Length: 181
Ligand code: A4P
Ligand code: MG
Image 1 (cartoon, rainbow, N blue to C red):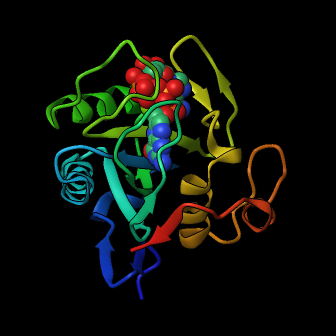
Image 2: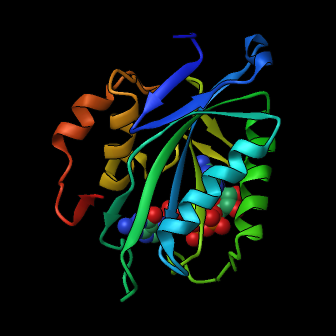
């Protein structure tokens, strides 16, 4: 198998020919709980794949998860994708937000409100970033089962920038309210 080809959950992704150029490895968290969430997530993966600056390497299973947040809203569908990208972190965030908007995301002043599509930059190489627009690792990564479980599924040996292993984090996370589809 070519080094940049990964088979994950019956889905094969071929890195494009220029994948040998210097690229960052990043992980994207996907979430949706409005307007056919399964479809939203699958379309978002397609949108990522269409960008010349991004190679989608692997995608986790889809997970149905109980909503985090203080008010009644539908369950979420969540997944995590591993990508290679030539984009800097902020330009990658720009692309993710453009995809959210194209998929009908309306930004609500209310935090954690329902959404057609949420794309979070979970990890970018081994970097820690704290700027006005971007906090990496994503602040929810450490305590959200709908992030840790799909991340562990596609990258079980991952070590986070602070030296913690994903396998330890996932072992200790509460797994109530989440189902792998
Ligand atoms: N921002 C900073 N760091 C990042 C990053 N690493 N990735 C800034 C993405 N964005 C980042 O995000 C607000 C601002 O965060 C952005 O403009 C960016 O500059 P947003 O997507 O506009 O707003 P939001 O998503 O409503 O806010 P927040 O606090 O990011 O919410 P979360 O953490 O994304 O949570 N329950 C379940 N079961 N599954 C879910 O997926 N998701 C949420 C939203 C709530 N409950 C959920 C789920
Ligand atoms: Mg978000």
